[in-house]
Image (cartoon, rainbow, N blue to C red):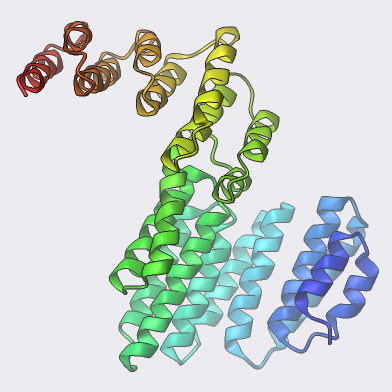
Length: 358
């Protein structure tokens, strides 16, 4: 029996006609819609016959429209809306997402209604519309939390929402992913799903470290320990100061997971930075990363390039405190005295003095 993965595999190999023939062997309507959507997207990615795409999506819409299952209608339309958005048909995407939400509102079972809304939120999220997606996830959570069902069933529904939020984060750039991971972690943690909470917390920490160059594929490689591949991706995707920052972010993550070769990556990035023009914002990010990497004197050099007095004061304070923690009190005092904002300078000098007294 054909399954969804087989159809997707055929499409990825460029065998579009064969993939489309297999679609109708699938028994599940959502699998049929998912298969058609994936074939349409594969055609665009691989330069296949573009004139096939409208007809393929019309077939997907036909299945959703004529399904007798309202859940299939809601989720199916959200999958089609995602495809429209990815293909650049933004007006059609917006209209189809609205249709999906309308269909979800008609689902009588509150658990299925909440799950359908969460699925719509997921497909909305991976278009990059984080604000709308978060709002939909909140609605889904409320629908299931207020459902008059047994506790275990309700918990399973809330866990499903958390899983979809985590999956959303996996497909998004770090700065957007952080909010999804944080909420998913909170749900897993409060429901005592400890293993999933641990996994999501690690993804959250990685997204926070990779805040400037955290493409989904880069983060996946780092989670799998493929540091060389992650660095190759950063080299391919970023240039100039951004590439240097990316290499230092990778080095910091490697340090966090006790991979000793992080030092080699950091030193390589520092050698390369001499040939790169840095903005004050880039200098601030590099100084912050070097501080966390423990390269305090290098951090100090970049902190001197920051022009904003507040940010410069914050960076210098961090370096002074770190030096004091290492027992280098005289050097810490010198750095503290160079802090431009008087109140932060005075506070840092007091803290360094207190630390020196034990």
